Amino acid sequence: MMLEVAGVFAGIILAQVSPGPNLMAVSSIALGGGRGPGAIAAAGIATGVFIWSILFALGIGALLKAFPQAITAMRLLGGGYLVYLGLRALRTAFAPSARKPNPERAAIPAGEAYRRGLFVVMTNPKAALKWVAISMYLASLSLSTLQFLAIGVGASASAMIIYGTYALIFSTGVAMRAYARFFRIIEGSFGAVFGAIGAKVFVDGVRELRA
Image (cartoon, rainbow, N blue to C red; front, side):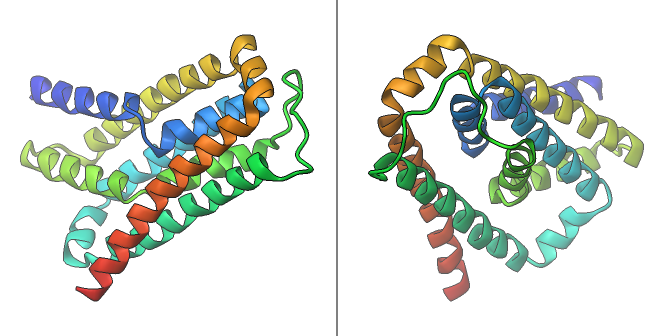
């Protein structure tokens, strides 16, 4: 059983390391606001990971399988939120009155950074589907609720370490000075990527509604 659980952890860590909305959220906040807000955003993501693990330990996975409309709603909500973040980044990039940011000053409030990290995770349908697969697999191992929650704690801790590391990398002096110099290009790139990902997720949700 230990080998199977280790395999689950390996899959979780690989998913966290790979590029996606979580990494985009942390890197954009760390570049624009500094190490503190970036780490707080990582804490929001870690909190969201733990919340997902609690929900699935309590049996929400079976509920989502019985009512796939919930996943569709998440696609619409999560996709819309990513589009919103993308449009906000594009507005920052192309607003004529936008000022060059000061790399020495964190301008993103802690509450906003935490909420953004948490909301990105909680409205990500891929996160829900990933935990559906994990919960179904762990159920086959006959793990107890406490054991499942222990895995959730581990997944949350790894998320904090991984995304906290990303926050540290993207808040280095070199990275923030580059952001201050090329912030229009960088924010425009973030906006385009957030918008593209969000639009795809939203359109997938609309297609599921029509089907």
